[in-house]
Image (cartoon, rainbow, N blue to C red; front, side, top):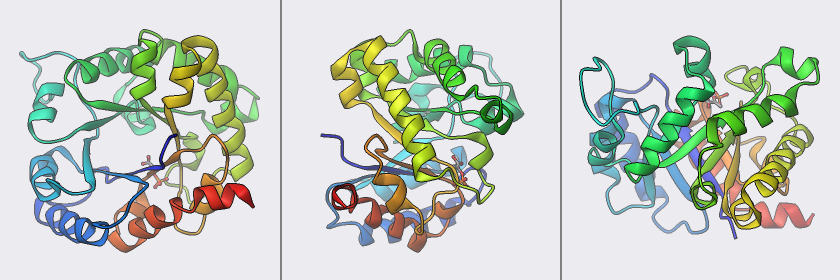
Length: 259
Ligand code: PEP
């Protein structure tokens, strides 16, 4: 049984002091909350301080990227073991902003997921189509390609531990979320492929979460879809009360599915 997984992607927002204040507030607010996995992804500069502030709480910490080499002359890069040592347990990979602005490809995602697993990090691997691709009816082909090339080298066991974030690029930071039906259809397709390519156990265990303008107002509809296991939240995660509301509403998933 997959419990809802809600992650906040802070992107390039929040100082160390702001991150620590937020984490302390959130950890107190969720101390008795069960049945949902909660993760925050601060920028690298705040990673260690946020992880310290979250220690022994219900809040997990993620990095927003990683480099695949263990160490070396790679100015500006950070390895998976460094991220682990800083206190993070997760890492976001292949975010569409990394793909469109910084040259991330399925090939580099493939190298990064392997490095993340080797260091004991849980990858949150992002896939999703652009508006052009959706309008050309290429969404499923694109998702197939991103899974095959970005994640195809993983074992079934690793797929079972992975989090896949389906993030239609046209819905990220635009205020325009995919409808629950659109998200449900894409998630159903991803689950079907995981089943075909990695087997029933991997497909059953892998969390497939939705990202793209998630807010307190739309999380209930999205998470009511059978294959939507949670959310990757950008803008709405910057405010602790709005993020908390998304976390709390995601716990109504089973009731919403029964409606
Ligand atoms: C994201 O950054 O992954 C994201 C989905 O952003 P937003 O929620 O702001 O659309």
